[in-house]
Amino acid sequence: SHAAAASGEEEAGGSATWDFWRCDLTREAKGKGGTKAVWKEVGGLESSEGAPQDRAGFGMVVAGEEGRQQLLVFGGVHDEVEEEHMESVFYPDLFAYSPATSTWALAPSRGAWPNSRMNPHMAAVGSSICIFGGKVDGGDREATLDDIWLGNWAPPAKGAPPGVRSDRRFTFLKVQDVSAAANVWFGSDDEEDEEDEEDEED
Image 1 (tube, rainbow, N blue to C red):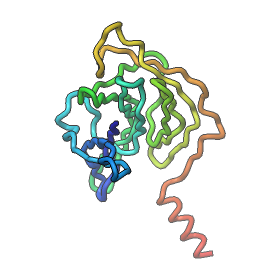
Image 2: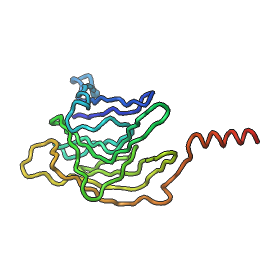
Image 3: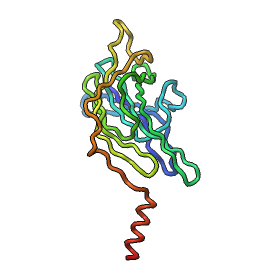
């Protein structure tokens, strides 16, 4: 069996790591017991055709039937830092990685589709996935989300080999819309600092 992990958390200074690793799990020799984990770097995502751009805060889940499992990566954020200003770009895209063929593909966004966000929660049941919530911000405001989406690939053509096909359609069904109670807006850090200074003066 195997698992795959993509690294993309923010480092100091606002840069994101840009590596991709695979972990193969094998049973130890008879008598030793336990499971052995062997990590292998698959390669830099920047050199992989169809792979996601550098980002942090994405959702990730393994889905699919035995022999056709894929690693699905959704959403995330990329911060562009210029001097003292930072601009955040949020993504709504879905990428699929096939461990069987070591290939990536961007799922076509057709029909209903989840909005851009970071930190979405993802779960899988068979070949279906569920996306719940996340966060998005703009300027000095940010909002939490509580919408729920169910998604799945269109059935593969009969006799199609395992792997990722860029021409296959991925469809989403919105189960729950964002509610008014889910939106939480915050002022900027500067505003909070000013309020703290005023409290101290009082």
